[in-house]
Image (tube, rainbow, N blue to C red; front, side):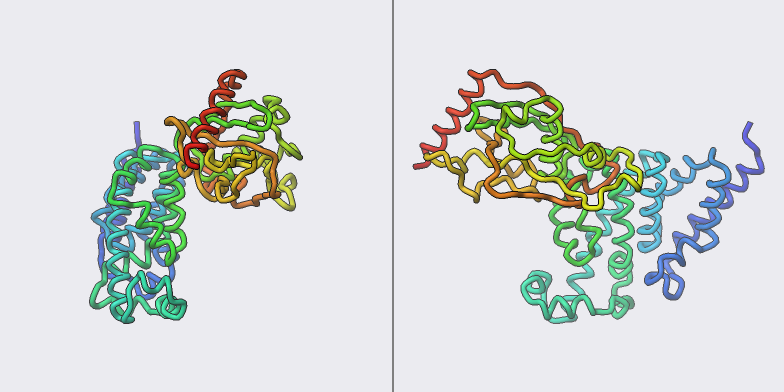
Length: 383
């Protein structure tokens, strides 16, 4: 039976936390120094209690479901805590849903802050991106100067960076949360815009725009071969290329598809898959090199050459590749330009993602030929 004294202690600490986070008057300097929030007795006490009494951790995370009733700034930092506990697999569905709803509210308040700050500076968010001097003035603009007029937008602006870290952690683990934000009001585009001014917000669109689960046909006009592969949780084409090359290497299909100069490094594959790697194993220079040239099907010219403007760029995703007869199709050829990508693109944006590229099948010779004929005919029709 659960200790009644511990239950009463938890109830008291929980209420102290909710009372503290519900207060709208902040400590002096609290928005500039996040440690003031985490060192506050009401916050520190609840966290310490959970660390000493693990059986209460689920209820602590349940407590955070009240985030939408909290002060805007303290709610943002509570959102960071939700992500922190989530990385230890201490989660609650209602808390996650409350977090995504709160995040959308904070986005709106940040947009209101930008309008107010730009109005004070005599410009607009759109004009700032075209004028470096205006942009620097915005960066130097003191948010506190707007606090009396618009405290909530200022609090949101000061807190969204920490909140975004918590949101990133949760949406990388849970597709339903990603879908929840995708169903919102143009969340990815709005985050892209704000990301120019609040860095961590800019990571969110990469997760919302990633490839959840797709299949793609890879055709090699030079060898007449092809394969079909599946992708899961791939947030950039560079991650796709990295894992694809390892998959084809293990399946013994690189040569058949016309690869050039592939070097297998087992530690890079483990890093790309977010598998454990000891510090002493970590490469001094982490990178992967393309053993193919990757092109969209319209890039193939009549003479067999490729239009470089039709290259599949690593910074994008499969969703940017045009479909042929309803299928994603990528053409493989010998690399005409040596392309490598480093640490930021060998593995996914967040370690909680589980990127996978799997071989579905090797296309029979006649099927590969039919698809290549479709490519040729589609390109001839453009002439």
